[in-house]
Amino acid sequence: MCDLSLNRDTAGRRFRTLQKRVQQDDALRTIYDEQMLDHVMKELVELAPTTENLTGICYLPHHAVKKERCVEI
Image (cartoon, rainbow, N blue to C red):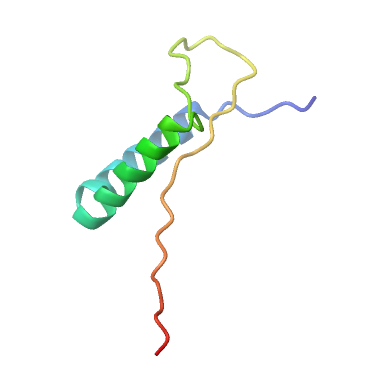
């Protein structure tokens, strides 16, 4: 078993940055909302505990990946 650094603050900052980005882009917000709903329905995500004193928990920093599609003619 390896020790993981406490990263709740880092994950929280990244999430807040993502929220600002999504709020400024309607198309990205629509896609993001659809994807998150799909992930929740498929139980691919779960709520993190709210207790601050938990050990052994590592938060996956959340981010969006936006790919531009190239259409070949």
